[in-house]
Image 1 (cartoon, rainbow, N blue to C red):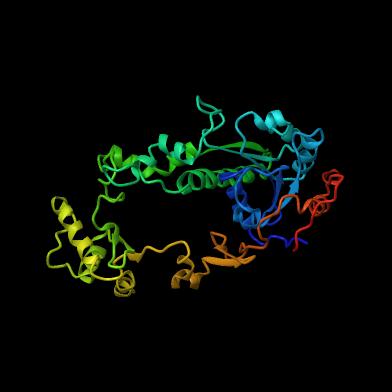
Image 2 (cartoon, rainbow, N blue to C red):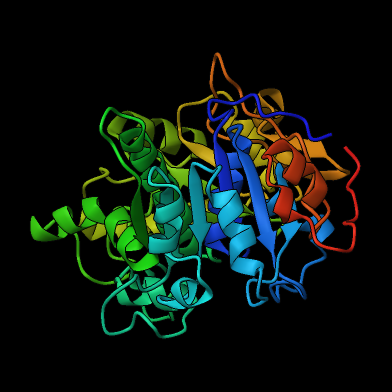
Length: 382
């Protein structure tokens, strides 16, 4: 038996049409918060070259196997939709409609349904039907061009800024807002068009304001928050590791230069003409000790300095360990659900859903008798 969700979304039912990237992550966030997420996997998989047992974006979900191109495929999905609160799909515009599970078909069966659409380019516009990936979406919004050192190619921030920040999290915000509306008196379901280009652009709202005010230069490595400032950046240590410095405010800057041991020669923090020299002084000083030594020296201070840890090191950081920022489930160390709730905490209840493993269970729990196929599905251990 699947363990029921206990988070703030307990009782909310979600149908996720299997895809890759931001759609599955958005559905995982909802599942972490207690929603009952049923992932509709397709025969043959999605093409993601990851063993399903390690695809953490499918944790806390259950999976059914449906071929939407089969004669009975759309009807089986619509049977789930009729009992759901939310649907998430990440197809190119028009694909869901051609498969028979577009908004019109779904709302005809369930007028209160929140229909979440996750794409890179959005449902309309000259590029809407073009293929793309995270890097292209953040490129055209100006977001990628902000990141990196001057005179070098922009630094690729994995797929965190586009797929997950500009995509998944905006889809989740939109879905929850639409769900609130649907549940009000007289409210109805609607379509949420979440495009990575929209979200990635929206993330830079403050920067656009600074640009308009003349407080931000439209080039890399020339500004307060993009590495242009010598007391906001990363510095190599004697053992080839790095320390991150964020001593922006005057009191933090004073404590930073004192503890670093460069106070006598450090210029006033707003003396931009001496920033290049200050950067060289800070870099040379950090090279005199190891990361562990600098971490110990800045421990307990307000200098806003922290060690740059790897993915494997992060769970062992004392603060993160004390908070339980990471958790272990199914033998995998992974980020715990976020954010936190005082009365309805989320949790990792299930490991990654295995394609089709929960068909019979979902058919029973959601009362969808036509969901199971002729060949009995495999079952995943609880």
